[in-house]
View 1: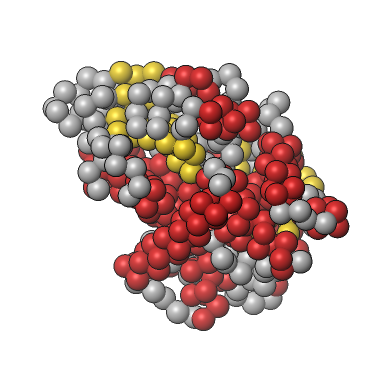
View 2: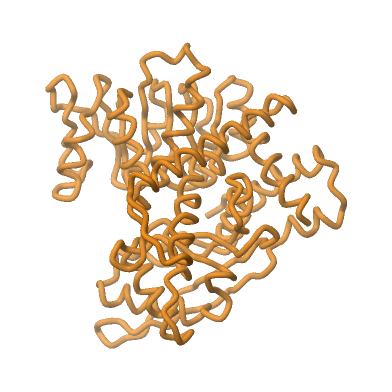
Amino acid sequence: MNYDFFGNTLKTMGQIFNLLSLSSAKIERLSRPDKILDFELSVPMDDGSIRKFAAWRVQYNDTLGPYKGGIRFHPDSNLDEVKALAALMTWKTSLMSLPYGGGKGAVKVDPRTLSQGELEKLSRAYVRAIWQDIGPRKDVPAPDVNTNSQIMDWMVDEYSVLSGNRQLAAFTGKSLNNGGAAGRDKATGWGGFVVLREFLRNRPDIKEKTVAIQGFGNVGSHLAKFLFDAGFKVVALSDSQGALYEPNGIDINKILSVKDKAGIIDRGVCYSLDGNNQCRIFSNGELLALPADILVPAALEDQINGKNVSQVKAKVILEMANGPVSQEADAELKEKKIDVLPDILANGGGVAGSYFEWEQNLAGETWPEGGYLKKLEEKMEESFQAVKETKERLDLDWRLAAYARAIGRVADAL
């Protein structure tokens, strides 16, 4: 991967360091991770062979509380990416006013190439490598790209064995039968929906509310459902295999009903709202250039960059992935007066939801889904209003306003 994700993140942070006139000592502390764990996992395969996997855990900053951040399994993962994601988590938890710092983890692997047994062995090996550096009050991992509640269940079990007692609060994003929170799987999508809803209260010019969503995993699919139920017209969806476009709108309920059986791309099943099931099948890149009011990159970083930003026609971009817009693209979008609701705000529902799960585990409580999502909605509304106030007070765009509030809180605590 040629994209300098961490460098791109540092450039945005640098603008805020200058704006806040931070001391050189604070800038030095906020520009470097506290600790980098760079290691290799040896995992026995079903055929008797041993495969080695590069793996990382970056603990960026714990000024406001324990490190917090997901673990992703992806063949393109690298240390630069993990450092950038750990920094973003630091600002995200601060922006959400959570008692957390920021961290991130990854294993360089395509989990689709592993059997269920091999995946469990890999998950447990990862925990064995880092267990002394994590814990409920030290560093609390969670799911990320290509990881899920089953993987978190294996990890919390391994951690409990190694630490000598059952500690459900050591990981979040677990299954409901293993200390998970009802509603946690919807948290990131629900949070993004609330942020977009609050933003659109001040945009009466966006009337039809057409939406294109790049990425139809956990985040993209739940967001699509919330948008569809609220009357938005979802005109495009994509996953790693390609994209669907139906200008008359896609029936999200029907798409979700067939997703687990046939996939939404391979069979070309579109389910248009007007009854016409013929829809255009095309690439992820083409989706970014569609004439939709709202563009939602919900896949990976560096999707909108200097090469394709000129093709973007949306009026607002909701960043549900981490780092999907490069700094070069960000500047051009600002010139084109396209609002970008930044990742550390838009997808903050994931870590806020994780906090509520952690809180339940520490207290030995179980909350109903309705109460959980209501608390999350209030947290997202509060965070949006805080960024809006900062934006107006300092005359900044949405991204810089979010960073200013987040970095300012950590700098003050230092």
